[in-house]
Image (cartoon, rainbow, N blue to C red; front, side, top):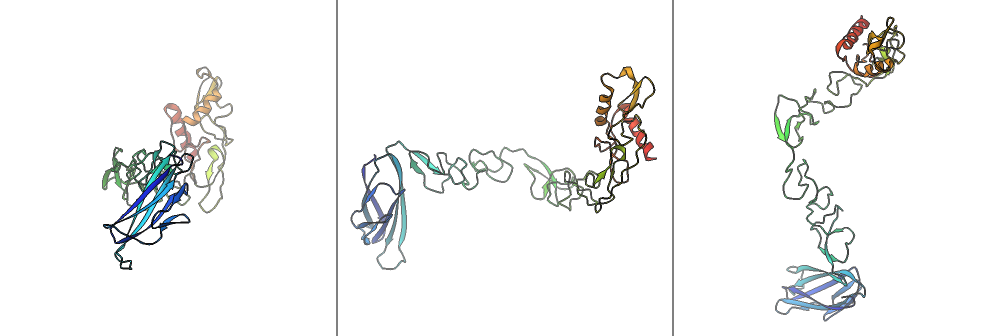
Length: 358
């Protein structure tokens, strides 16, 4: 209780004599020395080695609790000697006790990684309220990694994330293919492995186009280096400087120069392309009387609902055109990367492309 005087006994087993050092943390309350001990700054020590009685040396001292509620940790450090005035054969030991006064108290555990779970690297502490860097939950199997604790989800990483003693349980397993360059992307046709994630030597079965170069794999950033870095069958796409609009768009001549010459515009036609390179697809009066240009095709004006211009704009996204590689026909402003589309509009786009190539 607050203000209560407590008698403490420290027993040291073995040896013919023993010495003692005793302290409290924090330095609260009042310590009083007993027989063969004396007060020093920070605690109590033996005044002289005390002889054992029946192979046990006993020290007694008193501590008086403060007048207001709180908690305290008591530490005793002892040395048992064999009496030959030589350190050989002497034994060291320590003891710990945690007390509260004026409150019910609760046990807390040191939580070094502050993940809400304490480990067993330090003595549990009885306290009125949670001390700083302590938690009332225990069981952390690695108190220096906040990602590992009993409440963490189990991941595919070869670690015991949830501290239950098992690695990678309840995770999804898939087939992985041999990955010689360890870039996480493998090649079909070689060795395979069922695992919960890529491991050294095995990666996704997405057919790495160069499994000897870890910088080349599906999904890599395309660089201007005359190589197919992202394994899509194209070289340096979107990596070189481009110039011009619509049909006139061109890429620079090489990776070492910014020289770029746009193509020559031609008369605008109803074909889903920006022929005159003004940034607008199928603009102007392009069809015979009583017809409108819709999705690159001249159709009777009554067959188009809503705004014809809006229909043309929508067709730019649906019917993508050709790739803007150096020396070839350019892409439209929509940025399409290949001939696409369906029905008559798609075929007309293909015919327009072939006509421009001639």
